[in-house]
Length: 177
Image (cartoon, rainbow, N blue to C red; front, side, top):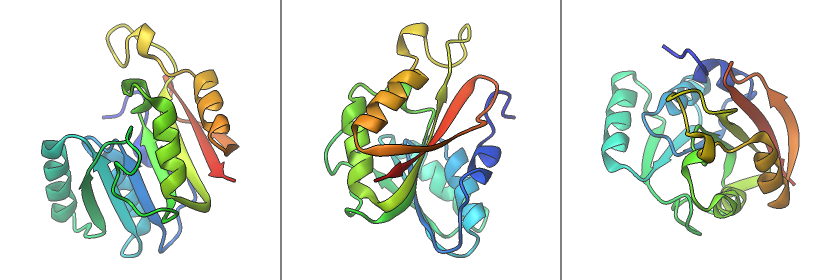
């Protein structure tokens, strides 16, 4: 199903622990949300944030069908200060996967991530490493590794490590300083 990037494999590299509070920014169809909720088991909470209400409704229904009652959906705007409707310093891990290339104000997104992330909290950033002939972003919309490092380190994050995110993706774990 995931020829390029496997959400479960990427989530497994995050060191999720019981009781964590996780937010999936730009949750979309919810592949990362579902895997994070499974990793938490019956503990913790996953907030799925997206601008598309219909996707959030489907995601909530999928989570319920799978018995994952620790998923809460939030209709929000990642590029607006306070747009995720999540409290300051309340999240242990933020997932932002295959999303940054779609957003216009990447610095604002990094600022919103910093606002909601608890001290010492981490961010899993996964995105496309290039344009692949109609799969993924067009060449002009690729959010490169260099751009990712510039934006996140400029917003006060420290790179914890790079992860193996798939054959056409890169992945970083950042930590809030």
